[in-house]
Image 1 (cartoon, rainbow, N blue to C red):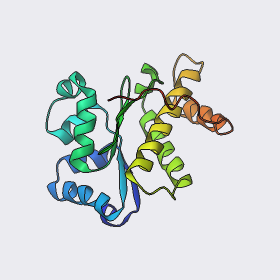
Image 2: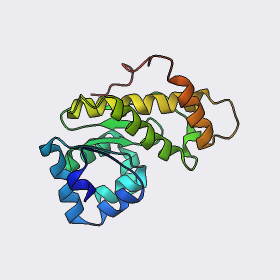
Image 3: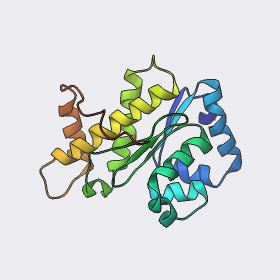
Length: 182
């Protein structure tokens, strides 16, 4: 029902695994953009592999192509998480995020990213385009990674990341023009 009615969706984790196994849900997801209902998928490599019916090794071998393939297959923006997260959308130049570190592999940090995308997207509701969706996903991914880079603890907890993101709200985003891929 959410795939058919929600104006905007950020899909992660079990939602992606469910879509990977259900062709009807895949069709509903693809149809959203035609109705100006945009989506962002935030898979890690194994979730991306399930959606592409490939292996995590194949996704990792060419992350840029995998993110573009997901974006084209489901007609939505994609944040392929991992070292150098790739942000892609149909018809747009893909981006490779220059921020973040291995600590983002910690449990809960992907949930923080999905929430940060949703929060920024709600603030920019007037730009209901695929390009606007890509911009929001790119900014959220950049800020999420920058927050992880700024946390000065040996172990990154999702709560630490949230605190750092909250502190960043008063600062204008910088460096978003870096990381464009062709």
